[in-house]
Image (cartoon, rainbow, N blue to C red):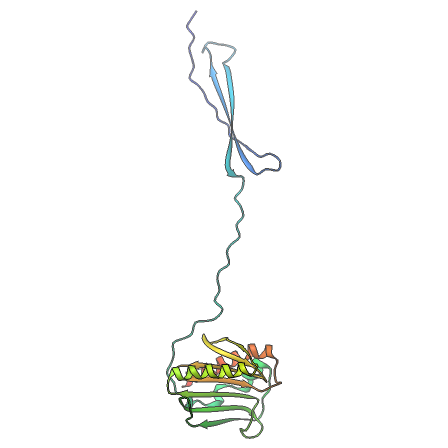
Length: 236
């Protein structure tokens, strides 16, 4: 009888992936078959088998992730200060009747009056008033713009603080919008006034009482101030 010869081991690995009902955990099943026997055996090799079950820690599918929102900036950046003389501004180029109608829904008729004011206290070296829709040759007007020149930027800023505090003491609702990137104060009482500092001067836009709602003024006055500021700087 010829000595038994051992064949090399043949290992077949079958990876069976599946999941049980109600579970998303992937399972790996490894089947190992070991084949032994004589090479002359006509009936084929005998096999012994073993099954190894391995649970994978990876989930069947990648978890869904919620993208994080991109932060947004509430206001645009302010452009560098440009030196201009606001007292040389032309009122007819600062605002037009169409600007006022679009921003706050108020129709102004009549002339645009320009009034020059001299030096005053608290560092004021001069000012101009632009009256839009004046029915009485510049005594009153439904929409008014004022440009006031100060001796320094500090004096201009200080006057904004005084005006804001005075309005608040009188019962005004105060908000702080930004106009073309620059800080401003909006005072709502008997109409509305937006006031802001630019370099050594200030810009204010005022609307008389009962012409527009508080909500319209809150949105529209910063728009008018932005247009006025851009035109004064451009034409200065």
